[in-house]
Image 1 (tube, rainbow, N blue to C red):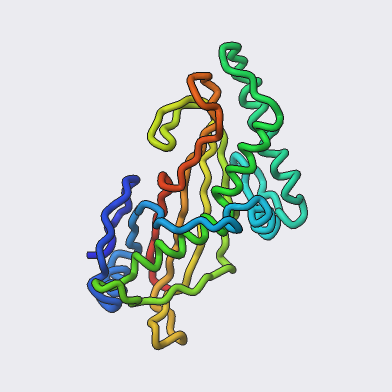
Image 2: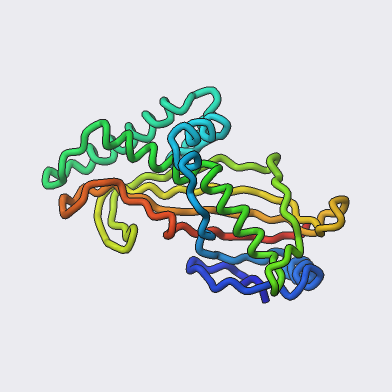
Length: 238
């Protein structure tokens, strides 16, 4: 079978679907079929990884910081969202009041904020989500059994949650400010030769974790590994 249900938190091996009809029948029977996968590897172009692209994405989107009200990127602006993320980091560190940590300046907080936005923007989270959905409904030979069409009306805000603690990012454990980023995208799935009848719906939830090290035990650069990201694909009846 192509998908495991319910989803676990551990990436699962990719397996092809038995067929579009069999998959649709299973989803209708179970109500939801889910799978957590490692984010599909995608080449990061210079444009996709640029701050300019991240700014464009963020200012066309909404973002929830630490469960608060959604910030409208087009109204608030990229720079003020960066400052909101930086200020939230400063508050976390100030409340902890641990004098043994290394000193972090405004530029580092801002750089970590920008890295979190780059990791969660629609170019990154949406691109990985779309590829995960395509892979989740592929046939044994890689053929497209169902074609995903973005469903922007169901879009959810991007999410960033900050806290302090340990994290294994890029293969090594460190301690500092953690940023858990989430981006959900939605799709309608159609047969390749029939875009009149919706077969299934999909939600792809992209997740990754970034770290700003405060422990003074090595390199102080922001730690973010695209290879650590996961995508949870949920398939539901239309």
